Length: 379
Image (cartoon, rainbow, N blue to C red):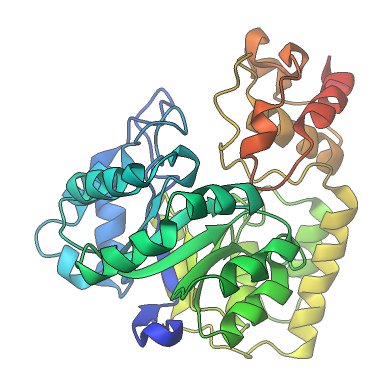
């Protein structure tokens, strides 16, 4: 396992972090029913092999963004037997639920109890955008973070970001953050904070955590044949996932990359790459291979959805991530397979255009318009 300095914190973090948003589930697909035996085995194996950064959040593995999910309580159990002492825990304040100053302490204290710890190593203000940043500022977020650090409930303060790059610098500059978390992969080099934000935060001394490195798995499996061909014809033989991860780790500004691994095969492969992927290690031919794959993807993908689930639940019961996944697959592969498997009440045609989903979408997708296009293709 390779390690990098985490910005001005002087902590050393494994370049591979374990993301706990997409843990394996028990049969039935209920996001609250984590397969705890399997997930514990995966996480502990990763820790035994050197992973020391574990990322979760208040709503992970819940049915709604307004309630506490099962990821934090599960992690408390998975990190027993001495594993807590081997890792740094990162979790996130649900910024969209903050209405008053008292809410700040309420959720932090609840999270400490759910995780069964006294101190959270890396505490992020979750999913900041221009509106949420203004709201938490009015609630006293900076004073709250200062106090939480002072009284030992958190060690370092950071934020995750989900909006256009122009607001990113404002947030970076308005508090003494230790780190931040941004979306970054070879398809999203100029999306949200992007490469410009990555370099800006690094210059300010922030440790940088990367989320969605494989775009919810879309850069790892089920790639278009012409993209697969690009990688298979390269001189160096690597899986699509390895190509994607190495591209991110090639950037020296990156501290840790989060991967939501839910099979042992994924864990083993990612650990292997994380033991070899040094910064600035890709040569021109390798970078050209990734650029070629990127160009093919960008010409095909219609909706920039990572299936994060932040848009759910829809008041009209539309399964938005599934609709968009199949819509993109249709344009990438030219097949309509799968849409009939979506229950009638969850299809795109049920959208009532209330717009609630768009207020939660980290990607800024015009969901209502894209659902109309999805309906036109499939229904």
